[in-house]
Image (cartoon, rainbow over all chains, first blue to last red; front, side, top):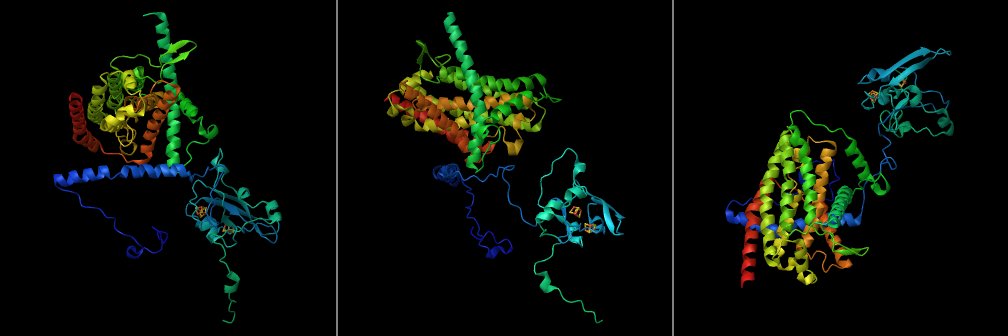
Length: 206
Length: 329
Ligand code: SF4
Ligand code: SF4
C-alpha cells in the first residue's frame, strides 16, 4: 500500500486498509473438486517461481556486509556513554554532583569524588557497568552539566567485561578537543534548538 | 570376471563416490547462494572468494565436532541410521549412466558402474531403502520431534512410492526395458523422440514424486524446521548429521540425473554435445529443487497423502491404462 507509512494515524477505516477477498470454503464434494481444479490450473505456483527468479535476476541485494559496511545511526542513538568537556576551557564538565549515580535505574554507575587542590569537587572514580546498563538515557537526561551523554559507539569487545567502561574511556580526548571535533549529543538531556530565544529573564521583583 | 574389469569398476566407484561427495558439499553452497539471491541477500561471502571455501569450513567443522550419542537412544540403530541414508544414496548411483561412453587413452570407458537390466527398478528400490535412515534414526533417538519425523517419513514413503512406480510404468511399457541405457537409446533420435512428449503426465507425476523422494520443499515434511525442529536429525551432531546431509544432496543430484535420462533424452546420441546437454538438464533440475524452496510453501502431511493417494495415483493409473490401450491398437 502507498500510505502504509502513516504510522501515527491508527484509524483503520481511513488508512486505505481493505479486506482481502476470501471465498467461502466449499462444503459439498463438487465444490471441493472445482476448487482443486481451479487451483491446479490457475498457475499460482508459477507466479511464485517467477517472483523469486525476478529478484534473483535483478540482483538488488540488500545485505549490509557488516564489519566493512555499517548502517548510519541516528544522532540521538543511545549507545555507549561519553563524558564531554567544556568548549571554552577543555576542562571536564562533570561536577561530581552524583545525580546520574542516583537516578540510574539499574544501579550500574559507581562514582567517588574528592576535593582537589583548588578546593573544588572532582571525580576520582567513575565507572559504568555496561553489562547492567539498559541504555535508558536517564543519566544523560538528569545531568545538569550535559557532561554524561550517549555516543554512537555500539561495538565493544574485550576479554574482560571490567573494561567497560571507565571515566578515561568515556572522556573526550584532549587532542579531539584541540581539533574542535567533539560532537554534542542531540538526544536525551540535550538543549532543545533555539533555546536562547525562549529563555525568559528571571523575574526578580517578588 | 577378469582383473581389468574389476579394477575399472573399483576406479569408477571411487570416482563417483569422490565426485558426488564433493558435489554434495558444493550443492549446499549453491543452495545457500541461490536462496540468498532470491531473497535479496548475499549468502556466504567471507570464507574464500565469494564464500567458495565455506564448504571446506563446514566440512572441517562437521568432522571435528564431538560425536554425541545421547542417553536413552538405541545406540546401534542410532549410529547406523545416517550410514543407511548416505550409503543407499550412493548405491543408487551404480545404475545411472552419467555420461555417454568415451575413449580415454584408447580405452573405452562406460561411465556407468554396472548396467544392470533392472536399472530403474534398482535405483528406485535403493532410494526407497534410503528412507530407512530417517525412519530408524527418528525412532532410535529418544526425542518426540524425531519420532514425529519418523512417523511422517513412513507416511510420505508409502504415499510417494506408489506414484513413482506407477508413473514410471507407462514409459517402461513403451521402452520395454528397465535399463537406463535402453531408455537413452530409445530417445537418442533428437528432441522429437523424447518420452516427455508422449508421456507428459508421467513426467510431471514423476517430477512431483521426486520432490517427495528427496524430501524437498514443498514436501519437506520429514525435517520441517519450523514444525519439528530438524526432525530425525534433531539429536544428531557432527559427522553423523553430516552423513544425512550428504545423503540428501547426493540423492538430489542422482534424481536430477534420472529425470532427464528417463524423460528428456538423456545424453542423446552420445556425442560431446549430448553429454553437455545431460549435464545442463541435470543442472536445471537441481536448480529447480533450490528454486522451489525459495518460492513455495510446504504442504501438511495429510495434504501430501491426500495429493498422492486421491489425485496423483488415479491419474497415474489412468495414464498407464491409456498407454496400454494405445500400444495395443
Ligand atoms: S543509561 Fe540508564 S541504565 Fe545506563 S547508566 Fe544511564 S541511567 Fe543507568
Ligand atoms: S555526569 Fe553529570 S550527573 Fe553525573 S556526576 Fe557528573 S555532573 Fe553530575
